[in-house]
Length: 130
Image (cartoon, rainbow, N blue to C red; front, top):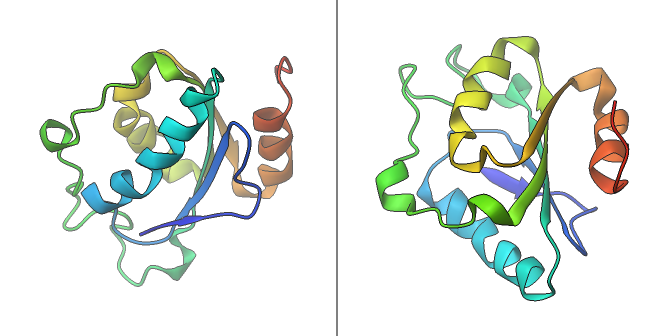
């Protein structure tokens, strides 16, 4: 499940994944994407992965398979997202980069969980690179 974090606003969508992800999670953030692009801004997405609350070893995947079905998602906002901060443990970095393939035109940066404040700073500040 994807939960919205308190610094979601303006052109930032801040989420924490703490369970299996699926189509409903995409549907949860889709209106935020439309609100942001409706203002003429590009979306910045802070995506934190908290697998500490998940009891099984496969984390966000059931039997190691993602619930996301890109065919059903019909994602059309590839050029509307400018930055994605992936925040989590190193074991999820490669998997999450592959999940973000529909958003490949965005700049994607990975941050370890202890660096979540640095990730927030990067996603909030417009021209800052790390």
